[in-house]
Amino acid sequence: MQHPVSPRRQFVRAAMAAPYLTREEEHELALRWRDQQDTNALDRLTTAHMRLVIALAAKFRYFGLSMSDLIQEGHVGLLEAAARFDPDREVRFSTYASWWIRASVQDFILRNWSIVRGGTSSTQKALFFNLRRLRAKLGTGAQGKTGQQLYDEIAEAMGVNSKDVALMDSRLSAPDTSLNVPVLDDGGTSSDRQDFLVSNEPLQDEVVGGAIDEERRRAWLAKALGVLSERELKIVRERRLSEEGATLESLGEKLGISKERVRQIEVRALEKLRAALVTDHPGIVSTAS
Image 1 (cartoon, helix red, strand yellow):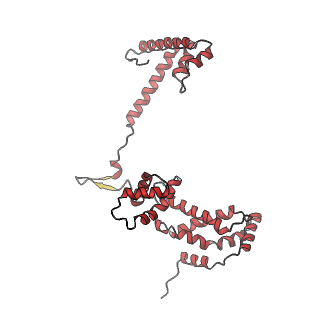
Image 2 (tube, rainbow, N blue to C red):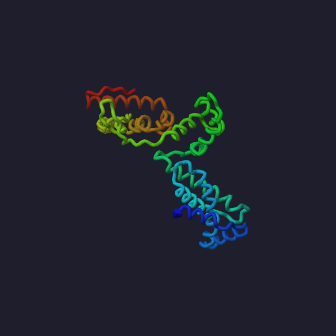
Image 3 (cartoon, one colour):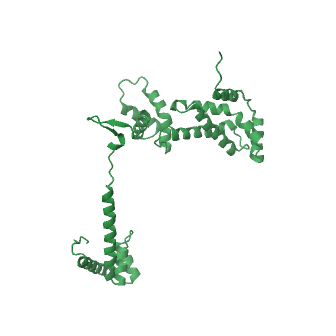
């Protein structure tokens, strides 16, 4: 009994049976698509290159993703190449399209291989797609070679840091683990893995308490600033309450006085502030300089 042919196999057969295009036919179709937006020309151009999509997608089948999805993403890259291709350049469409197809497939793999986003830099992307091949090549017949030695050789071959190699190797060798996976403790009680995660963030009551204290201190300071004269207030604001922190010299130029006079006014203003704060809030211990 003959088994029915799967849709993907039928698609692959149809792609492989599509006729090749001569350079002249390819150039004419590309011109029609670019200048006239002729969809029939686009269809003929892309159909003739689907075997290229399949061949490139097959090179990434060992990443555990569906071959159908890889081919589909490669087709997206092929369409992008057709949209950007300049037929007036002396380049065959297959050569130009290969880069777009490969980039589309690789981007799909990086987005779907793991729930953790990876390959966000050119170094990480190169490691992701070349680490296994280089490890197999350099590790062949390497008796007694430690993991770090292998990482160093791979790092030198790719021009990257050995720590980046070790990190990517650990990512590739360890599958994703859900934080909701139950874990049994010594007493036989089951808890989710996320229950054992330690957070360095402050507790919620500490955050709220800190916000309330900060708001209270701001109100106290705003009231205390009212005892300063206009010039004292300007100096304190620009010297102590701004991120930049103006210099004595620059403030002196603005106010038309010497920088030593600015320093004297600042010292007097800070003393008045301390006195006002202590008067209104006797429990405050002033540590301002």
